[in-house]
Length: 358
Image (cartoon, rainbow, N blue to C red; front, side, top):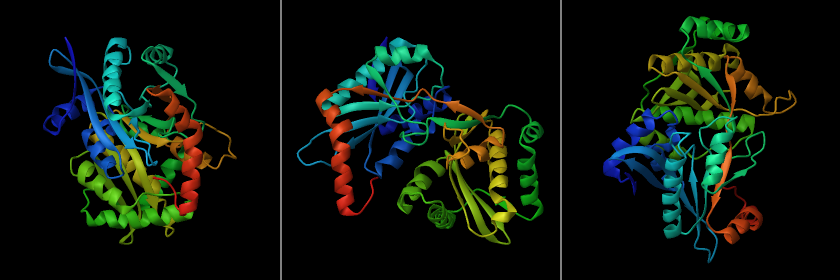
């Protein structure tokens, strides 16, 4: 017999255990990730579907209230959710129906999901359609909430074979960094997070992208690193930190999420050795998959994002395309305003305030 309920803090260990053990489990669905996002204005709501007292499907929903006068509405988003058997239509529909009940209570306009399901999978698309979802085109680059294209590495081969499978230049750069005296450390103190963030700011300025405030990374430290779901790696050269990365881990999967490199000493190739150390660490933890995260789906060498694809591909990463973003609309009129009118309004308001969005 099935039963649905909202997971409370006292049950988070059981919820996390299910997420970690499920083939579709993802760190973005962890209870702790909800606490990280709570800092940025997203209220977490963890849902579970139980069968005979055991969790069989789950979904962490992030609720965001709209900052629009006189509009008491919100949106729901389940990053890389739901965590459920991809071929079980009944469990998906039961979980989504429960989400609909919560949405009615909270005033949600729609629920957005971007499942950890790769294409082609027409059967899964049909399940989502049967549950009331519609597909949203997200483009080839990073237009979506989560990257629709990622590079992944199978960690099942032995370490020697993983190295042998890389592009020759990548193996050379890994060895060069080690030969030049670059060293990688992990198990950092929290003060090291400040060092990493300083280099991240330097990277963002050089490569022209926005980053979140330091408080966000403090929250990642508190909720993810302290609980064993993430680790900070730093690369040293001549006693100076020249690069750093944040890796996340859950069950038998690891993800490379944030990377930073100083403008100094880039010629000693610290980023190549960092990736190899993270890959080796993930394998030592029993991981079977290493996810380099986002790349562009546009392979044109003139694409400004092509260098990112080339770097990750050199480690023998395999391009994976996900099934994409799907919206379940609860309030059609408000959804139309959200997709057509509200973006224009918010864009003008932010422009007038001289600041970007979240």
